[in-house]
Length: 316
Length: 198
Image (cartoon, rainbow over all chains, first blue to last red; front, side):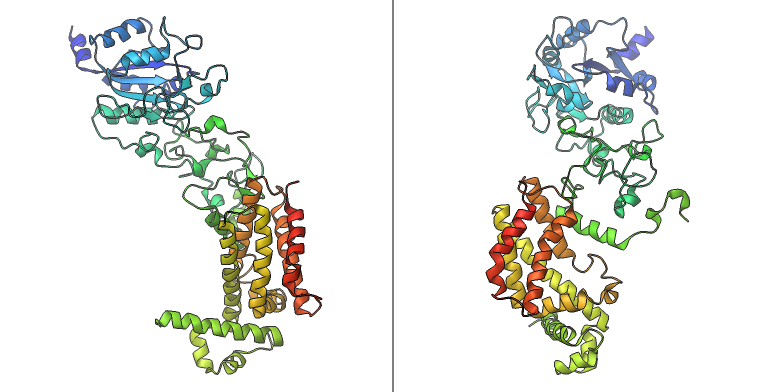
């Protein structure tokens, strides 16, 4: 009886999935500090498709819809469609489930690029009706209206990534749990996380500054931006601030950032190649004009830094 | 006139005179007193503007690059076709060369001939950055629009600058049968053919 009372006093979280590869669930299972069981010892997990065994999601949805159960956090993983041939929960499409819950949840959190922007599922030619919760790629033409807000006053809070980092999710949930304010950017991503670029904190920054470019994979030296497609200076993500598994990041391991927190992630091609016109990257780092980028690159290359031209093991 | 503007105007006067002397007599045969003399200035006063002959030599290049770079930037920002831009670029380059023959002489006879003077602080593209940047921007935009071939940057760069430098050199040598501007369209056509996408 005692535990039942505690459960009643706790905030509720419901996790549902649309068109998803389950990647964000896999990611959240790796959460540390807090770990997932610590998080859900403070917050009551009503249902999660991969974790719940006994609870029936449709009963829970119905209870929330009938105001028999309060819903603090609705977490949505995966893209949204009304087409039941592509996805359904019981006899409902994921779209219908969202419709039932959208005005009941205090906060709606879209986790992962599919729920945020539609991502790869939105590319299906066979079904044009696949969207993110509030965005379809760059446009605010998602499943919910552009001016939609939950009772908390926030629009859908977007935590993109393919997958998103578990700490991005836990940090956001904890901020909201304690009723602390979140500042969102133009894609409704928490600024505290997404005001950083994945370039920030990259251990290859010295090579970026002096325009010493890696020509191929497998070396500790060289910046991956100019030849190997790295999107670090163009991508909002704290991947080199909040490390993955607390250990590393793509760029630290020698893999280019592929820009998976941005709306255009699935719209690009040749992820390991920088698109260049006559030797000049078509997209230059955020905040600089192409003119400024060319100027600073020319100066950096001319002045030469002895250190970056050596193998790291051979530097003084 | 504010002091800084006055100083800038005087600097320009010094540049023009120095350019002429450097080009005529050679860099090493021209001294700061020679330049001061030609300007009716005291040597001490000239040093108020430039600390050394080398600094003056580098400043001339930076000044020329800025002058030409700003003109190319204007062309880059006009909303016309890439082909028209090539024609305009060639025409403006020749006009500027005609308006400032001493700068061209200086470029050919001092900057290209006395590389050791420019080896520190003016090496590579450092003193001609504006021109190089604007030419690169022009090429990048042309390729992005599909008008120009996506070729090696340096090949494309010299395909533009080579003919332009060549024609003003021949003019300086007194070899041309016609005025340089009369060759502008033919030169532009050749440059366009070297760069265009098909």
